[in-house]
Image 1 (cartoon, rainbow, N blue to C red):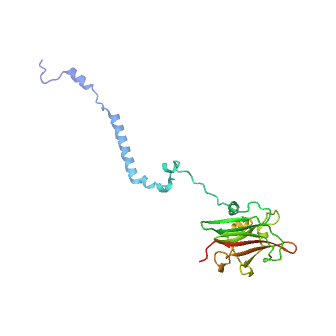
Image 2: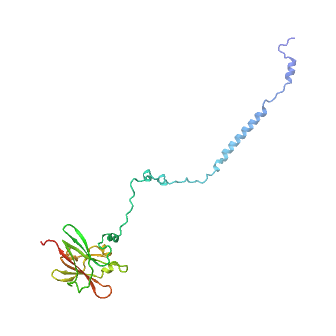
Image 3: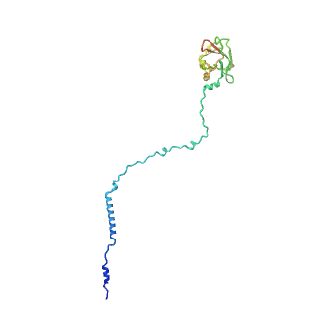
Length: 250
């Protein structure tokens, strides 16, 4: 029997028993749902604009710092910390003028009054102390008055040293001294306002008197008498110096 153009009846039975099935239908449906939800969320986000609701926080200013040059303390340099090669000069104390004067005085430790002079010789200036003792006399011209003699080119000052006392100061004792001049012609006068030659020595009890301001720089030849008044009681004591110039008359 020719089977051209005819199908096998068994094949028809097998074909009729086949059922149509949807391949992967459940998986395809899940992807579509997920894609649809994503589209909905995106559209909602674009409509709501949640980023506009976020407000910026408070602006905190940045801290400020002083300039570096002001904030950094200068460090000592090598020259500042290095010890100096030169020795430090210590300040010198000013010497006491009374101590200096005590080293220059003629009368180092007199027990009584003394005569002193400051004179000029042919070669230099000198000072001299005389072992004279004050005595009683009737006045500066008393002929019995002992005399100390000075031979020099010129007499710049004449004076006295006072004895030391634990009770009375030297300057208080010198206030009781009066200087008299007996000129070569016998004229007697009290010397008013003689110039004090060395105040520092005066303060320690060694007084040098130069001529008054308008009488020149040196004393003329003659006799110079010191009257020492008593602090208590009447009467005075006297000491005298005779000055003889060695300068040739011009």
